[in-house]
Image (cartoon, rainbow, N blue to C red; front, side, top):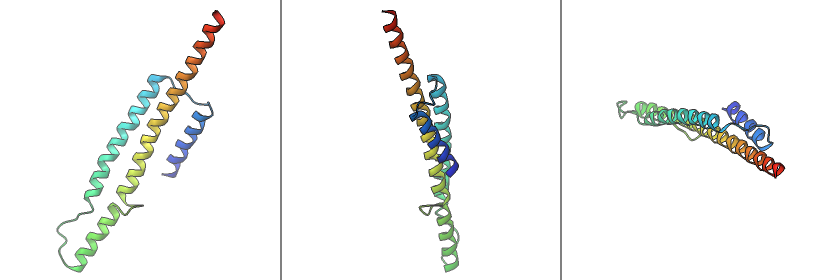
Length: 122
């Protein structure tokens, strides 16, 4: 997960520093892919959350303990399956947003160049 965060941070730095901009359609297409993947991960999160409730293990202490362990593996607030998937989905959405930021940077640069061109021809 850290490598994805690091990559997204690097992309953010490149955009902020003016080293990355994207043609609008390419940025929109890339953002759509990452959003679609994040939605797929969101469906996995819902499935993982259902693992918290494990019926049929009985009412004996061992059955309750086992059910509790399944619940913790599904979601325990930090490293359960649903928790990790949620972090992954967040980074995918962040990457989609970064592509949109790169698009805005491209458009701003393009608009500036157009203004300068108009001024030079006046």
